[in-house]
Every structure is written in structure tokens, then in C-alpha cells.
Length: 111
Image 1 (tube, rainbow, N blue to C red):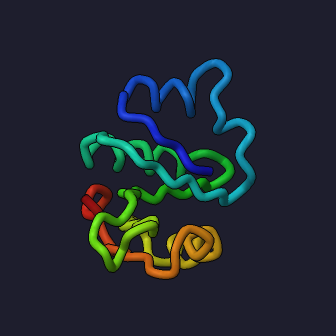
Image 2 (image 1 turned 90 degrees about the vertical axis):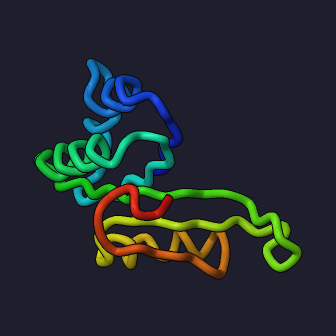
């Protein structure tokens, strides 16, 4: 699942509200979030998703279109989080572009 939201309250409501989408996510689903949330909030969100009975995983990603001549008309993805989760999401990433940049480690490293 791909989520693009910048409001922390909106993200929490989307996932965990009365009709939150976390209820409908499959076991071990991967959520790719593109937001301007501070890394500490992303860390809390990732932990809360992982604590769900389904063991949901979070990747933080900065997604943009290339501006230089070399990258023109390409979508560039710079993601951070757990490497094994990023590898599982590889098929999705490869559908966006042939070059994906991954930064293993804390959420927010990809910005």
C-alpha cells in the first residue's frame, strides 16, 4: 500500500481510526509512506504497525520525478527502513523505475 499524507493526525486516523485501513491489510503487508512527518513519528507508526497482530511493515520513501537530462521522465525513489522489507517490495519498486536508492536504517534517512 502506498500512502501520501503529511499530517500526523491524518495518518493516525487513516490507519487506526474507527474505519482505519489497518483492519483490512493482509498479514505482513508493506506500507510505503511518502510524507513530511518527522522521523520520530514515523518510528512510532512503524512500531505500531509492527505490533498489530498482522505484523505490518513500514518503509519511508521520498518519491519524485527526475529533473536532470539523465533522469528526465523517470520516477526516482529513495527509501529507508529495513532492508529485508525493501527487498520484498522490490517488485513494486521496479515497476516505478529501474534505479531505486535504499538507505538502510532509521526512518527519515531517505530525505
